[in-house]
Image 1 (tube, one colour):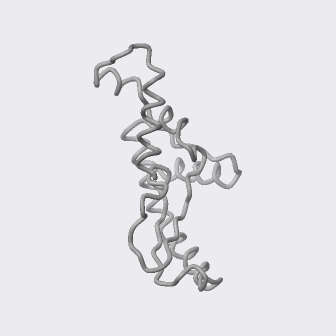
Image 2 (cartoon, rainbow, N blue to C red; image 1 turned 30 degrees about the vertical axis):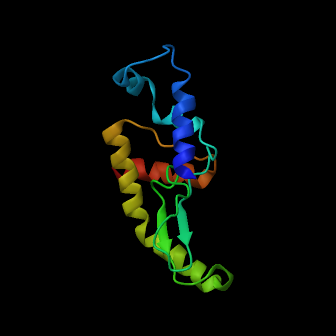
Length: 135
């Protein structure tokens, strides 16, 4: 489960601290998001869109950390009936929500001083440049 994955990542990241029993404040200052992300099982998986079929409106403990800035779409169809029309509606929904998602990422980065994981693809690097130019 994602909760287990996050707990395991925090444990592994905290095990690398120099003290055997660090205080919570010292541990918090030593643990940064990137350190925790390095220990996640799906380290480089930060989806732009998460689609949940079957009409359920919950993530079911799936990629909780990684989908923090993902556009989440809940569809009332079952997976076998998911077709190109549904896919295009998801893409259009993401396109409409993209500016808000990009703003949220930029605000998070500005408030917490965290550089979000930049994906290696050219399109993702261009998206990051657009966010920087937007602000």
